[in-house]
Length: 347
Ligand code: SAH
Image 1 (tube, rainbow, N blue to C red):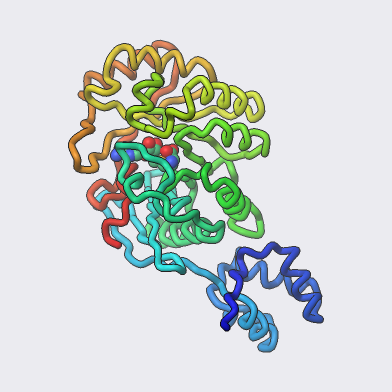
Image 2 (spheres, protein in one colour):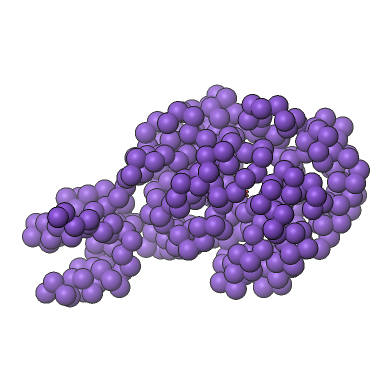
């Protein structure tokens, strides 16, 4: 019987040190291997040139390095790049590089498919196939960092967890990935440049606050009226806005970090005065800003982008109440790389 080898990047540094001691070597060898795996991004044991051949062979017999592979890379006319990323078991997720004049942002996936059921989002149709491992999230970032250096001559500046999946439904792995992204032993990126976006899972938002995380939080709100929210995001019927509000107040008390609300305005759904008033009211509970996202049609016609007049009514109401609001234009629409469009069409 073939024993399945363990993915070495699911092993902690301490465990690696112990492994070497148990095999009659020095604990320090574990540090060397750890460095190869994370900060040097080695794809094979062969690459670990400062280890003896015997050591490399011993690692080979005990472990594998499960690496992602960028299957296809599409470039949009606006400079956005979308990677279709093949995982070791053949499944595919997508990640996106979004360049602007001053920064390049990686938009990464946290699950294959998604656990949630937002009616306006293409990823929701895939259902959740599995959670991504920390290394699979980390590798997406490394791949985009390389592309950023290649095409834009500078390293990646920001990361948003706004690709496929609900990050807070893969809590431990997302946090482990961020730990490596921010650790000097990994990418050494500041947590302030990382934003995790959630559709709003109150219990997990509180857990983030308790775990004293240093990254930013975005909430995909889309409506501040329970009935409407539950219609377009059915899972949210279990998480009423009162609970969401309470968790966000808790988050702010502990972290003092402003929330970003993601909000799409749709014709006939939330383009009325009652929706605007509800959002303005909701925004007063916790310091925040609002990102009005352009709708990216996912071709069934049920949802339509609201009129410019409706968007302007939102902006006017928010601004006159002292709430910062930005309109986010879609990027990479021509290659299905925009918000809500990630659905492995090419896979
Ligand atoms: N599950 C997390 C992470 C995904 S982020 C979350 O919901 O926050 C993806 C963002 O794009 C979310 O704000 C989501 O609500 C938004 N979105 C989904 N489908 C969209 C679409 N068709 N057009 C524009 N935005 C969309």
